[in-house]
Image (tube, rainbow, N blue to C red; front, side):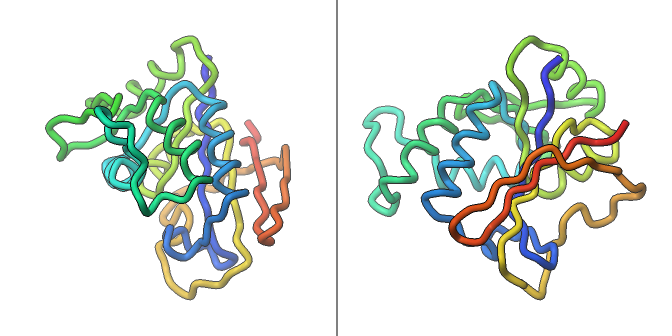
Length: 186
């Protein structure tokens, strides 16, 4: 069974707005390696559209956008090549190597997890909350940045039950951010 892994950048006060967490070359390299540990991405509409808008490379030309720093290019190539599943009730269609996932979320994700492969990777705020409520996340990674944002959204806000986790890995970055990887205690 493929594991479902969740990773998110957060501030010390739990803010998970992507604008509150600075990224650099080292963190992009880490994100690239995370995606390489999976053979599928599971996104909600917001993260899908945000990632597509930022990292989709032109298919015909392969030209890298002027704003993209050279150290971002491996991430862009990796995310472009990876199969994507998008959970959305509002999108009518998707492309960018993606397909819509409709119907009962628990059943649809269980079917994805039962397919052979390395794993499924997810990010964002709303979809991971629903996945955590359903007990479908097999690994949580919180990349905690040494910042206090003072605003939200906050990590897994509204989760109706406690999720007991055990620390399985920890990685410190030169920026002061710390990636902590956890597995649920079952």
